[in-house]
Length: 277
Ligand SMILES: NC(=O)c1ccc[n+]([C@@H]2O[C@H](COP(=O)([O-])OP(=O)(O)OC[C@H]3O[C@@H](n4cnc5c(N)ncnc54)[C@H](OP(=O)(O)O)[C@@H]3O)[C@@H](O)[C@H]2O)c1
Image 1: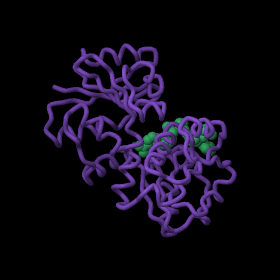
Image 2: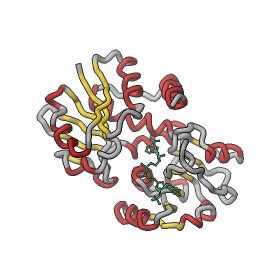
Image 3: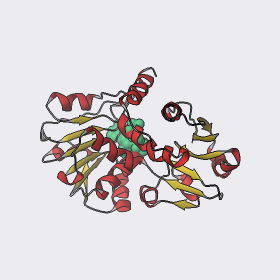
Image 4: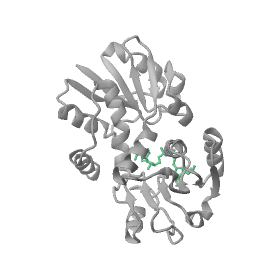
């Protein structure tokens, strides 16, 4: 039996077992995907012990994504740029490979939800400069975004992101977020604002062209006030659940040998589970 899991502290909230469990069942794979509660000080030993326990690898969540960079034997180029590992492959030879699939998940979600979408279409506005923003900006840069307006409350954090990733990134003060939307082809919210239990995202969309694609990577609730407002004024809008589902595909493929698909049935199962939180 092949095994994988998600390491975090805490980790009980993770919906990854439902997601990977869905695919294991769909593909009739003799495997398991489990929660792996691991304290920060135990991370290195837990990762080193994966193969011996019959694990093909694991996902990493808070607070392990950045510390894992210094533990694994190999880090792929995307994980190194983003500064975080979300997927670990425990190879049979004992080597640990660290990858980051969040940029892939972001890109695939937009492509699947909005066929024909291209990062090169025009300026992108990215709200937020946290861990998720790094993956989003990396994907946009790789896909040829001509200009990224990075809007964050803490300018230092945005400056650090821009310095780490390079490219055509313009820093915009949080107070100027509404004006930054003028002429944009894409707006992505990567802040936690608008998430259940967090403050709302206060953003006037008046300056945003109607053709601009709006993506909120917050997925609880699925239909955030930002997405509702965008759809209400005629903008195409894409929710964040697809990013979560797509980022899991390359990891599942590496561990279990089958590349799974994001189907309406999977989306429905995950959305129902998230709604019952
Ligand atoms: N769909 C997916 O697959 C996916 C993947 C990853 C994350 N996410 C979601 O993305 C969100 C961010 O995750 P993360 O890991 O990047 O978190 P993070 O590293 O903690 O970053 C949070 C971001 O939100 C900003 N922020 C928080 N409170 C704010 C406020 N009151 N006013 C203005 N800005 C505020 C922060 O600004 P400062 O820098 O100024 O603090 C920072 O830019 C979460 O809701 C998470 O669930 C979704």
